[in-house]
Length: 191
Image: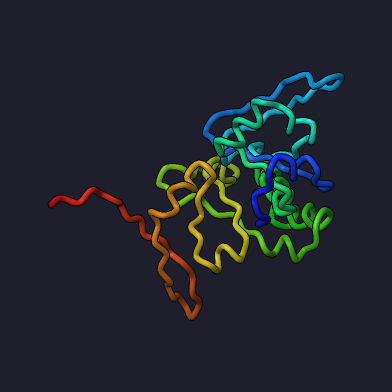
């Protein structure tokens, strides 16, 4: 993931910017900026519409700047965010894996698609799966193969701050290794 950019760097960046809601609340942006309007919404973290393309003009909005400085939203130039948007949208409509591959193939190389995997958040009760479509509606985590290989705990944006409470351990099943995570609680010690 690219390093965190400053506001002036974001304004000068020539490529596409993305924004992600990290809160459990809907965030709405409606503001007149000179002759133009900035008008978009972000659903709560983990929802399909919690990640979106960011109009450059929005960088001048004080409300957006405050949310960004608090960490309530993430602004990124990372192209993987576009894949995340496409995957979340495809999963939200219950697209089959084949259809998701077709969608991703038209937008990005199949190599990038193969590098992403959908997981459920490790925090109990966070992940909710629709019984009819089997689509994860809340607590969805899109992880890169690199993060999976490195033992990064799959946590939704709402719970990423709890990563330090999950200890990874390697488990070998049928000759293949994968990570499992044990949750530890940090309690006060008594003397």
